[in-house]
Image (cartoon, rainbow, N blue to C red):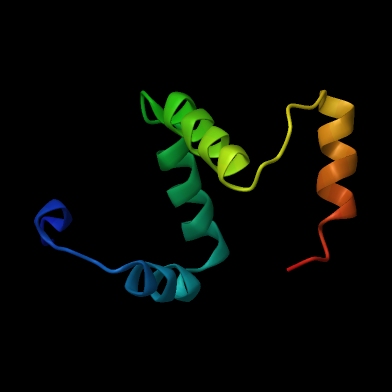
Length: 75
């Protein structure tokens, strides 16, 4: 098995690879990612940067839920 840390992948290559995985393999991948030590901190920082980038104001959980559902069809 090759050492993937030494291989460079583009986002498109990763996307194409993940699309080819079976559902159970995708779940294993998600489980592995979410159990990394600093996953929560990095995910929180990432979502904060997106909120700043798109000028999304601070909201309560209920306001955020309503906001996300009202904008779900925008993409």
